[in-house]
Image (cartoon, rainbow, N blue to C red; front, side, top):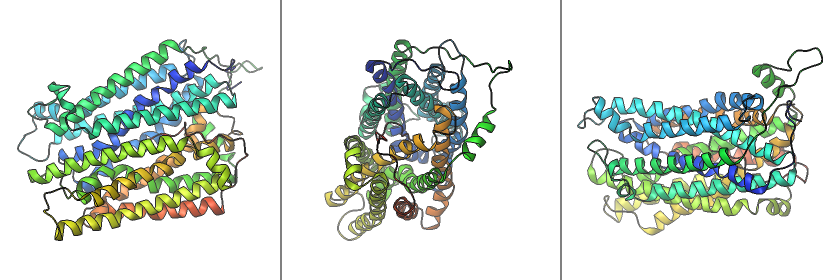
Length: 494
């Protein structure tokens, strides 16, 4: 029994697969965010140094929304179930948000933005509103979806591992589809209405990608909520006749008070891990467009074209990254046994993350030297440079698979004594992910701007954080019991 909810027998596999498929719709949109939105916001006239501040909405919404939604979904008494109402509201909110983001230029133009001015304040305002709604909606959708998979598994560990595996599979599917769509430059031809006076080809491709995202997300969500039923949750009544209810803040405080030393170490290692990851996740395609291809988001037309080509190459790199992630996730458990435990595995891949982020400096210098001495600044860099950059994307799929798995697998043990539901437990770990994201969002823009406006300073900071997290994983993090699954189904973007 969980907070008055009696778990039935585990649900059939087809129901688990149906719910897990929602991850494809979520990750499709998340992949578009990572690959296209940082370059897109700069075409609206937002300076590079300020672009990172817009990404603060993700960590802030994760900090506030996911624990609150998780807490309330644990106690929702709707006749439609505990999780499905939040899943439906989240999916509808995501659809509205991506519409606002994709059509920001058009709406801004009709509201008075000038086509001649590089800065489009009305479009920026609409974009920011849509972006914040999108991150709030993503957090509203992901937590209940994961919690519903746990409910359907009914505390059956084998079924839970299976559910996590399918969730991870559909995450990879969504990533591949999203990055593939982002890397294709003629997608707008499928939706010719997307190219308008205010919206060029790059903008039209973005709108087309989000149109496909809406279609996929609504399809999988409607299928899941109509075919998978939940038993309504009934609050328990204590012997004295009063409702068994603890305020949300009280439960969060109680959850933190009950944390043991291993959990605190896990939270610290996870914090450092995400300080390492977030600069690259935020600026990876921008790095390809600027540092590797030598383009610019605005200004000279040739530079803009180079920048767009670099961004699409970065989206291709992210698609490769997702394929590696999916393949790596299948071998995490045997790899952990061979290496000698999950902490050794986590440490090794964090050293890989450190090396990959450090290598971006070398590859950037190679690209700059080539443009200066061997080629025209308006042509693509040679294959040895672009191939090296794409190789970094691919190799990073290995540590990313671990990042999406081990912290959640360990937290499922360390938080088991807090007495909270599935939603609240996810919220506790989520704090160690969103707080470092807020830190990176605040400092990365000014840090990069202080060193000439590039992306390398934030990448170097991430490399250092990855090395420190690897050392902490080896020296301080205890190994969990052997039966813990490392299936990376509970990971997410935020």
